[in-house]
Length: 431
Image (cartoon, rainbow, N blue to C red; front, top):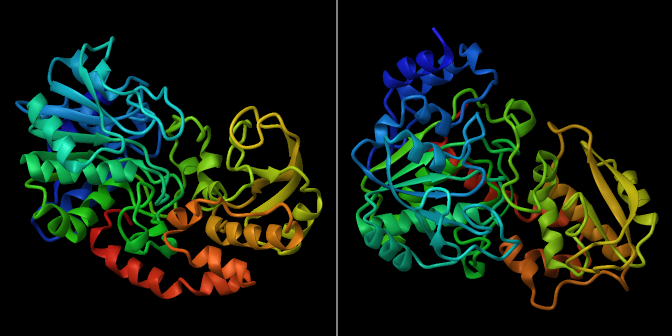
């Protein structure tokens, strides 16, 4: 039996994971599919995405529905076709609209931008701009397009301030308002399934963190959808999604990073070029809240950090700390855009030496404390206090300014991290 026939026969016998308004327990079907995934030698990788699993059934679960797809360039199948292109070409799915997040459906916009509203030249579909809009406005788009099922397929990078998980939240909120179903085509969390870092204080809610989850949430989009549906939507939307379906990832484990999946990396945004970038991003994105360059305008964004008048002493100090799973290299660079465009900067490049022990948030706290101590005339927070939105409170900024050590800062969030780990437990799908 060839791969497609085998997958179709197997997938057809397995229902989707229906979550809404039911006990949020991992189901027997999921356990079966996880076991069977390891036997799918013909697939050629250890992990099968929700999109590939659904495509293997000729999208049968979407038959008879009016589908609106929330996606970007990461919504691809193993043959590298985009799911929207594949759905339309199959003739089996009635796609009535596409909704683009930050950076856009086809991914042409830089950070903080989108592609606007337009007709996609390849498919002829109407593309709505879903970045930064309210749930009520998105629900209006759903009604205008006649959407009865919202399909979400975007690869996340596992950090609270990466905006795609909040596009998911808005899409679900709008679905409650419009009476639409939601189907999440799940993908692996590329930095693993463990939770770390501080929890967002609701007073600091923003587009880079809307609900009280921790900085490195360690959840997939499907798991987050289950948590959103039960914990947040009843208060915000007045109810839960009428029909929430998760098409789970097969063969992924919580301790796996993207390097372990056998999948090909598709950059989810212009400054997330490799899975190595994703590994450091849950920590080093905090440098966006400082005057230092976070490496935009270099070939290694978020792995390269620095500013004019920083020198070798920073790398030496960081390596002396003996942080697990990471080494720092003294580096010099000239950004081609963003902060310090055209100026010579000194700083460090992060080299992850052990993905299993590397802790990006613990690492970035040590980086912030040490650079402020070594280069007080260079280091400063951005004047708009954007770091408070990224961190989820003003605690990081005020503690470091008061002279707190790295351990002091890290100890301050341990209780809330423990509480979040307990809160998320009923919604986890993968062992």
